[in-house]
Length: 214
Image (cartoon, rainbow, N blue to C red):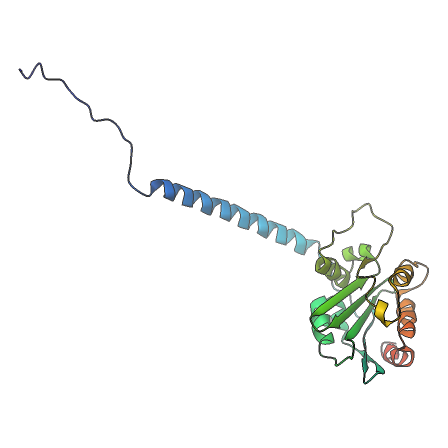
């Protein structure tokens, strides 16, 4: 067979079959997606921080009091005002009290909203008299976040409580009674906490602790 009769063959184009390129493409794509998600998370965090309410001032804070029983005797202790802006800090502080049945934290802000926190060992219960206050006061926002509750719509104008309404049920204050107190818009929150303290048997020590805020 002569050279002119020889057939010309072309090697098939198999592309770049080097091992690992497909995996590399997937890795790059995954990293890009992760980067985009990180940016989205950062944007969400910035938005949450932007709409987080400013701290209540000393003039805004009516009281921060811890109530507990030691050897069956009622005790009420005034706490630092800055705990009215920090639910985690308040919980940590309440854990330090040697209450027979845990300690109860009471916070009132602007005579408009009150928050109850009860700590018994690892168990933490929270209650806020008005969910709408989450837009105005850090302690109320912290309660909503702790409960993983949806924030009220901008159109909401009717106050409503959120949290564990049975927080004090075993101490003599049923859930329906606590909810009724929270919904009493005619009464200021400091007075409502006084009524709650009286109901729980803390009348005298609570009054003494309250006087330190006046």
